[in-house]
Length: 410
Image (spheres, rainbow, N blue to C red):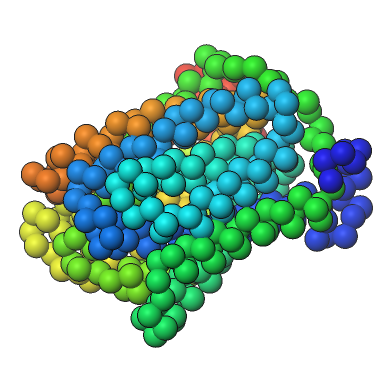
């Protein structure tokens, strides 16, 4: 495939829909969650049952998992020798292969290795995939297309979780079998995509060196806060459901199922909302909702609220996080087109600065005061609200923040 001449986006739009750039974005959006969602659904039960993890070990595991995200800036080096499309599919294949091997090494050391490999695939895929989404999608259509991508990813997760709920207990499935099927499916889709799609050429050649621009400072700050806040949810929210309420695999997976069913329905409407109301309002809604949700998570520990409230908060949490693609469209509006690929790598690194040390550090706090972990997340969401207030109603190059000066209203 990659030896063929590249097709411009204009030429690619004359192809059948299933061979166009947006079709590849949709296919990759479906392939990644098959592995990652399955890995996430089984992880908390697997590490407790097979490796006897406590909050300390799960914190260290997630800190190691975030190291490749912190090193996502290495994508810039790889782009010297590998095209973005090829790198995205290669990273997707690595994610699938590593997921397939997860249950083969049920020890702390073994899980660190397989988690590191799958994390390299996941984070490098996400870095390049975000860049391709912004390069291949016109600005006017971006909120709608990104909303559909979120919906498709949620649909793929929905299928994976649905199968787990229906078959895990009924057929007494093993961790090894499920991880093998999920990872193998992602690997097969990556190979199929490499063979079936032509190579697409974005209209603007991408810079292949480190890019850190002063005028992107608000985007960097929002990425940093999003990464720190997100880690608390990813690491400890599901772990709480297993540790405090004794959720089994099929029960936790059913909760994930509800999450992604809701997102599959809601995400396209969120895309329309961002297109209509703008990134500032969308992000303020996300961060404001997360403050309430995280404080309520703390209430589960401080006031002994029950499993129904905790599960409901988990679903609301996911719905608010679905608005995070507004941060991508904000950057698309303020960025130089040639900056998209290198800045995606830089932003992913910034997003994971806190993620490298925060899970491990909070793992120790979790042993003493679990509610305080969620209180800290609420404080981070408040900081994000303050930053989002600086986003203009109509951001663009030269008007990245309201501090850059007023422009004539559109």
